[in-house]
Image 1: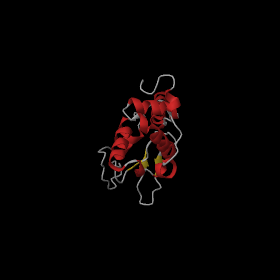
Image 2: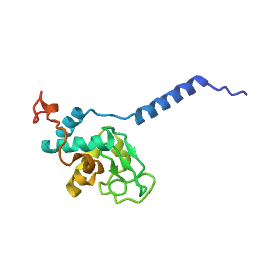
Image 3: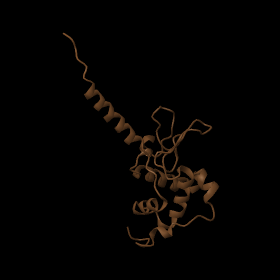
Image 4: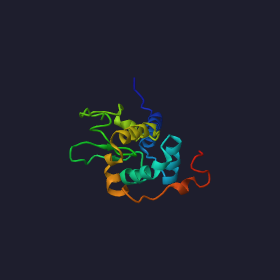
Length: 158
């Protein structure tokens, strides 16, 4: 008995897999005002938004999928806030980590930024904004304001 290979379903399956992989790996790149409003709705204090926006712009250029694997100690920085896997999250490859935020690093690449925001707020509470290189290099002193992002709805409305 001769087996027939059915190329059509295989092509559909392959297309589905490739589409799924493309969708999963696509980055969400926020614009500054959209992210500022989102962070405010998520409980970031209004008076800290300028610092957070400056930090995120310098660390990840507002990209949820940003990864920096070039730290001299072999650690990797993940997501919008470039959270380091030596201290804050658990890398999938088993490298040692303190994992103080108690989460896998891959969650920091999600377009659902709740995990990244919660961990970033924890880091801020423990170490302050100076925990981030970009904030130290770009954001101490004058920072562009995000107040204009709230002009139409007011800073205290969603």
